[in-house]
Image (tube, rainbow, N blue to C red):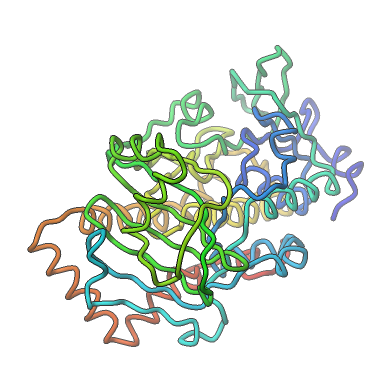
Length: 419
């Protein structure tokens, strides 16, 4: 990694930092680490206080990382410390049905043995992933402004000036918005979004169970929305359970016993008796897609650019693909002596990621509309579709490789290579 003093010396006159990142979630912090490894001076502004990221107690949150995401973390030197805490996803079973009635006989089964790269992905708990990235930021010399928020931004020919909520001003070459689907960075840059609400809410928790999950992830489609059962380390699974917004509010308001009484008919008994492990969360679901991913001196990344339904568990994976692409574009531009904040430079990132992100948004939206209903005709069509896909090995393998992030023009970090 470049010497921090050398990075400051090479920074253009009048700038306080090369790259200013708004948002300290997993996308923002990973981008900060990637850009620091590429030789940039990076400042990260996070509205959350540092203490909010320090709790390493198990709370049930976990992420299904694709092979691409695992390679990004490996390229940043993080995977070695995470791999022993990650649970491999060896199989994925997709079924359709109703709560209490069990799944239909048409099952789509993805087996990791069908591809050469090994497990189709890994489950990593938030309490392990987030601290690993935060610790690496300090070692990389990233400046972190915790408990602060950007409230204004003014682009110019030479940079962009950002004003924080305490009145401080910072000048940077580029401002990257990693500040979520209601991104203030995008709004201030005049970037509009296409948005709609699904009328659904995700209930998220973790459960302990009597039997081993054997590294198998399950996606059970029900009329109100899908139930994902994702294998965590040990005899525990992460649950992402979609219900209509009104029904989800009622379920979340129940005590733990009542919550489990609602979950059991949907979960089934294939893993034996279940009990809650960790906390319970809810997240409203909708689609948000930016008309543009860039503006003068501004780039959007992750949910700030494209927020999709969690039906395929691809939200964080798509964000980490953005990270790898933007870091490579900016690093290559800097090596050529270009002004990395010029619009034509940032548009290379947009061209690289926009079509792929739009395809994912369309696919998740279509699947949610097709499966989240109890229409008998659509039930027959989707059941036959699951069965037909399962009977075609070549098509099945193509779905596996696509979900694992192994297709298309992959950035260097997504290949596990350093910048």
